Structure formats: structure tokens, C-alpha cells
Image 1 (cartoon, rainbow, N blue to C red):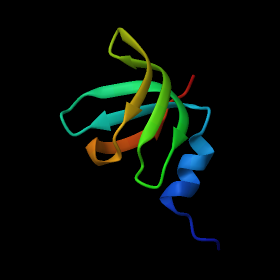
Image 2: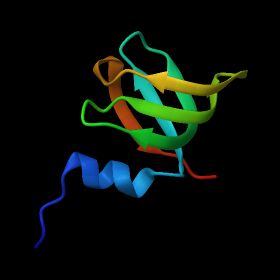
Image 3: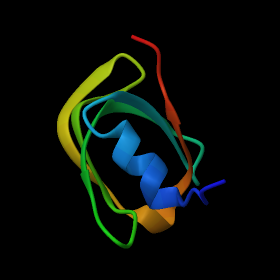
Image 4: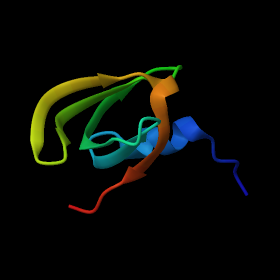
Length: 71
């Protein structure tokens, strides 16, 4: 059985719709465009509630969880 790591899961989520929950309680949705070793995320078509944000950089240390979203 192969071991799965967090970056393996993020690679699978690239170019897919995701949900991000931040430490302040905010939720952001969008398409995962890129990430780095600090789990900083670049999100395209980002939205917070009904507000469209566009392209967004989310710092990895502000993230509680990342989940895939069904389209």
C-alpha cells in the first residue's frame, strides 16, 4: 500500500474546484491553480460567499482545511 502525503492530495486537486476554510472562519471557493511547499495557494475564480474576488493568494498558515467541491 502506498503512502499518501498532503502534497499528493493537493496535486490531485489542481485545476479542480475547492473549498477553503480559514482560521477567521471565512470560507473561500474557487479553482486551485498552484501551491508551494508552505501550502500557500493560488486560487482562480475565487469567491467569498456571493462576492467574486478573482485571482487570490491564500497563505498556508491561515488555512484550517481544504476540500474538493463537486461542480
